Image (cartoon, rainbow, N blue to C red; front, side, top):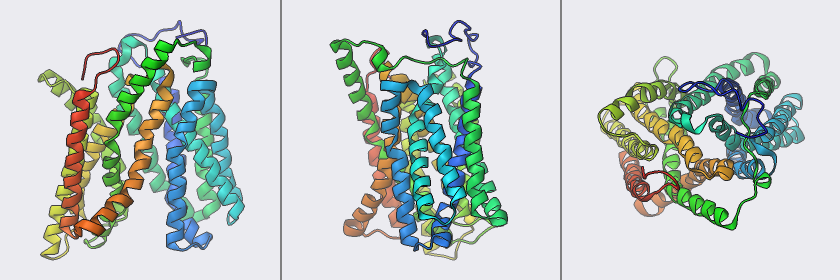
Length: 433
């Protein structure tokens, strides 16, 4: 706490979440609704309205997504070095709103499209590392035992916003067209900005690097801490390379399965967000405390390691499903729920915990930057999809069930590497996990 915080003297009671958390959580729910609402209809907009080919539309969307996950580096640096997290979030949110407005107001215009996507990329990418760090800023050191739960619920809210968007925005498009379908996410982002602003008098705001003089020794220590964290993050992109195949190889598998009441290879992707919302309370409220009572301390790195291995297990199950289809009639799409259940448990263990780990272990003046590095693992994972696919096509030539087993084997190897890195990791000022 510092002189920046009007509420610094009004300490929340021990064991309870700080009251200002509700504004940050509300902001995140609305922001994720706005982002995924726009993203969910973007591919069809590019092909139907802008008349791009399927390949061109996919390329455009991936360039946009790459920018969204690359720009957190800029947002994190801006927050930690110059503006602070509060002002970075608030100012960049206005660019975010303008991006949605550009798509909504200039439907069919190339200028409106590119300006809108550029502004949304700046907004979504710029605030990503800041919001997740700002959550942790609100907790005193004596409340850090609550971080596991709050980051679990933070991740739950992300998926609530995305699930609602995937359901609602296509309906708006079907009934009122693209302008409203882009406009409603814009209104949601405006609401996100307003909710965040409401908590301005209660937030704890950490000083920026330029406000605190650091000795050469402290700077060197921060760099060593940053290097140790990066070494832990290095294996993580492989998880995202496999995880993101739910929109590619898993969709192709689902296309050859029997639909069930509207569920097919494409719509099955929506089950992911729902399963995250189911797994989060099960893990945070039941399984983590149970593991602790049984003597197995569920540290962040142990949970992340378990998530990596579950990612591999999910692809083994997908391979078993494919093997049965390779030697028999098509199966119901409901069979895909089995690997989805395992994969989404792995996602919660890895991703929600990764946010917690990044905040707790980051040097005090580099928390947004470390959060941006965590988000970069997702961006690199997108790139690795092409690498892994090329590796299979050139050297392994695995198809059908063998393809999924190949990916599972790669994930098992990377999970072992991650476990090794986790075992060697030593935090700056805490016992080894």
